[in-house]
Length: 100
Image 1 (cartoon, rainbow, N blue to C red):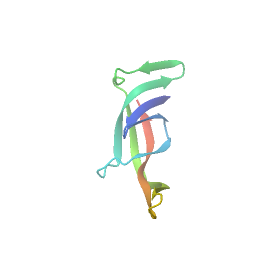
Image 2: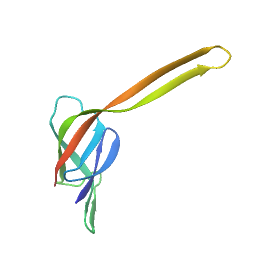
Image 3: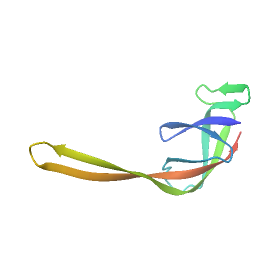
Image 4: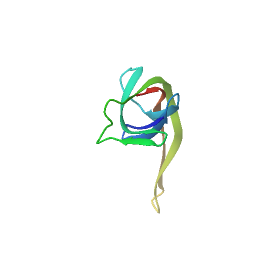
């Protein structure tokens, strides 16, 4: 059984016992509950309008991880001006515990 959920402005296809990295969820919540946009169960597909009724995806936060480093170079030719900055995004690592 698979489900499509939305969090942090992105949609994810998830299944039970799957671990994935999503945008930080804020607060110090350890248990999360997501609305289901679509439910896939073998050949049977349920599409919500906008959510599938009575179906929730439950997850728990297992930790916080950092993404890859991104380097940003701002350069102005003929002025001898360049500025190099970096950014590393923080993500919450979650594990899907149940669907339904």
